[in-house]
Amino acid sequence: MSKKSSCLRPGAVVAALCALLVVGPAQATPPAAIPADIVLDGGYCDSIRGLTPVGRTGMKGVWVNSDCVGTDALLGGPARITSQGKGAYVLGSYGNGAPYGEEFTWVINANRTWQVYRSNDGRLVNTGTWSPAHEARAVPGDTRSSVAGAH
Image 1 (spheres, rainbow, N blue to C red):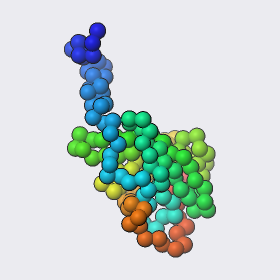
Image 2: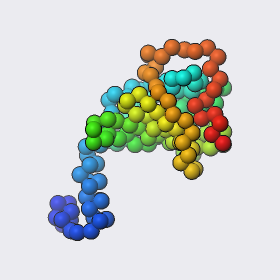
Image 3: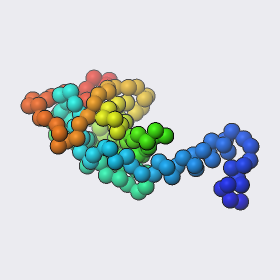
């Protein structure tokens, strides 16, 4: 049976799956508005670097200096494009033994905003704006991580 004919069957589950099939390919291209290296505005010591596409819908990168003393953690997750053409990366630190004894999930948006959530319960930890690394101004002595106080 073809995808088209299976999508004609009634039922909420089938309709939802068909919507995903239709939307899926449009979301396959990572948003170009997010550069490979970004810094978190607001005097944070950590940043996200090396954002690189993985396959058609994935993204990977490195959370650099996550604890302000040099610890880096690998990140990975999907790259999505919304119906308005805006992009976002959703990157988790899963399994990397993140500092603070917790794992975090980042949402990096093409509109230069970000959010970070505690992965175990989805609690919003922090939000802010980001800049491409080449535009950022270094602030000497930044000692506050974007996830400090997440406990």
